[in-house]
Image 1: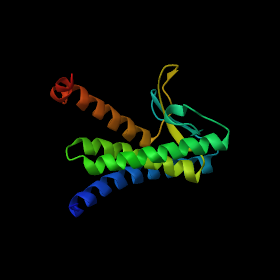
Image 2: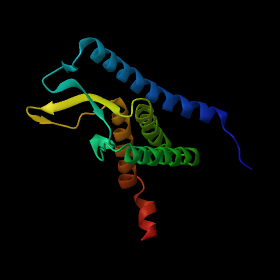
Image 3: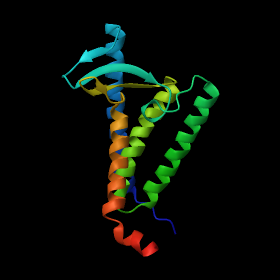
Amino acid sequence: MFKINLKGILINSTIISVIFIADRISKIYILNLAKYEGAMNIYITEYLNFYLIWNKGIAFGIFSFDDMFLYNIISLIITIINIVILIMIIKTDNFKKYFLMFILGGSLGNVFDRVYFSAVPDFIDFHINNFHWFIFNVADIFITLGVICLIYVEIFFDKGKNEKLV
């Protein structure tokens, strides 16, 4: 029969919630600064600025559409992917589950913005001289970190499992 691990659910929910809340706090802070300052372009260091943009696409502005139908379809697909990630978290019993929680916590932050604002506020502008990386937010950091860690684990720690399949 299916056994419920309340302690595990509480820990998992806390991790996901902390990531979501950290993302929300950072976005609320930046949006409030933009509201009171007008334009949002804050120089932090010679490599880092806070510059507010509104992203209607997915990762790094890919698939940005002005058409609300396509925007809603993409939002629905992202929601389905979040459900799949949640199922993977429930079924995973090793440390990969924490990387999946990073991805889910960040993604939920961005999905909230997609629903509430119809766009995601991105504001971290990392650059070297005139080369600017894509502008991103705290949720994107957790999503990227989770994906990189999962790829690293698959390449370097699951070698034996993958070799048996060949």
